[in-house]
Length: 75
Image 1 (spheres, rainbow, N blue to C red):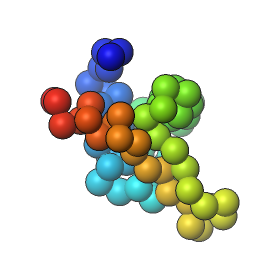
Image 2 (tube, rainbow, N blue to C red):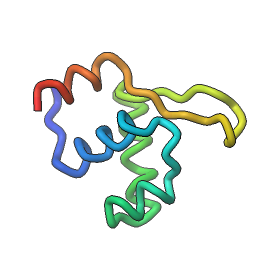
Image 3 (tube, helix red, strand yellow):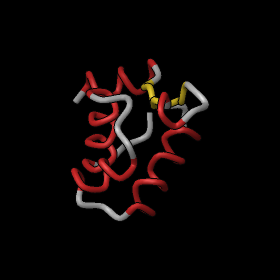
Image 4 (cartoon, one colour):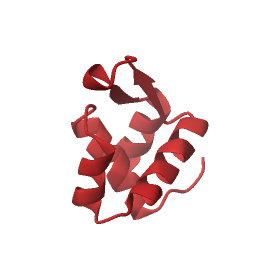
Protein backbone atom coordinates (compact mmCIF):
# COMPACT_ATOMS: atom_id res chain seq x y z
CA UNK A 1 0.00 0.00 0.00
CA UNK A 2 1.22 3.48 -0.77
CA UNK A 3 2.44 5.74 1.96
CA UNK A 4 0.50 8.90 2.68
CA UNK A 5 1.76 11.97 4.47
CA UNK A 6 0.16 13.62 7.48
CA UNK A 7 -1.62 16.23 5.34
CA UNK A 8 -3.20 13.53 3.18
CA UNK A 9 -4.31 11.53 6.20
CA UNK A 10 -5.75 14.66 7.80
CA UNK A 11 -7.72 15.52 4.65
CA UNK A 12 -9.13 12.00 4.51
CA UNK A 13 -10.15 12.32 8.16
CA UNK A 14 -11.91 15.61 7.41
CA UNK A 15 -13.84 13.94 4.61
CA UNK A 16 -14.66 10.97 6.83
CA UNK A 17 -15.99 13.24 9.57
CA UNK A 18 -17.93 15.51 7.19
CA UNK A 19 -18.57 14.09 3.71
CA UNK A 20 -20.24 17.32 2.60
CA UNK A 21 -17.28 19.51 3.52
CA UNK A 22 -16.45 22.01 0.79
CA UNK A 23 -13.06 22.61 -0.73
CA UNK A 24 -13.04 26.08 0.81
CA UNK A 25 -13.71 24.63 4.26
CA UNK A 26 -10.88 22.13 3.78
CA UNK A 27 -8.55 24.98 2.79
CA UNK A 28 -9.40 26.93 5.93
CA UNK A 29 -9.12 23.98 8.32
CA UNK A 30 -5.91 22.67 6.79
CA UNK A 31 -4.26 26.03 6.00
CA UNK A 32 -3.79 24.95 2.39
CA UNK A 33 -4.25 26.69 -0.93
CA UNK A 34 -7.26 25.69 -3.00
CA UNK A 35 -4.95 24.30 -5.68
CA UNK A 36 -3.29 22.01 -3.13
CA UNK A 37 -6.59 20.65 -1.85
CA UNK A 38 -7.81 20.09 -5.40
CA UNK A 39 -4.59 18.24 -6.22
CA UNK A 40 -5.02 15.97 -3.21
CA UNK A 41 -8.66 15.27 -4.04
CA UNK A 42 -7.74 14.32 -7.61
CA UNK A 43 -5.02 12.02 -6.26
CA UNK A 44 -7.44 10.39 -3.79
CA UNK A 45 -9.97 9.85 -6.55
CA UNK A 46 -7.38 8.38 -8.94
CA UNK A 47 -6.10 6.02 -6.24
CA UNK A 48 -9.57 4.84 -5.30
CA UNK A 49 -9.67 6.42 -1.84
CA UNK A 50 -12.72 8.63 -2.39
CA UNK A 51 -15.71 8.85 -4.67
CA UNK A 52 -18.46 11.39 -5.06
CA UNK A 53 -22.19 11.03 -4.98
CA UNK A 54 -24.74 13.48 -6.23
CA UNK A 55 -24.58 15.74 -9.21
CA UNK A 56 -25.81 18.96 -7.64
CA UNK A 57 -23.34 20.89 -5.55
CA UNK A 58 -25.92 21.37 -2.83
CA UNK A 59 -26.17 17.60 -2.38
CA UNK A 60 -22.57 16.75 -3.30
CA UNK A 61 -20.61 14.56 -0.92
CA UNK A 62 -17.21 12.94 -0.99
CA UNK A 63 -17.22 9.49 0.51
CA UNK A 64 -14.35 7.27 1.55
CA UNK A 65 -13.92 3.90 -0.08
CA UNK A 66 -13.19 0.80 1.95
CA UNK A 67 -9.52 1.19 0.98
CA UNK A 68 -9.41 4.64 2.61
CA UNK A 69 -11.28 3.48 5.70
CA UNK A 70 -8.79 0.65 6.17
CA UNK A 71 -5.92 3.10 5.75
CA UNK A 72 -7.33 5.37 8.46
CA UNK A 73 -7.91 2.52 10.90
CA UNK A 74 -4.23 1.56 10.65
CA UNK A 75 -3.09 5.02 11.79
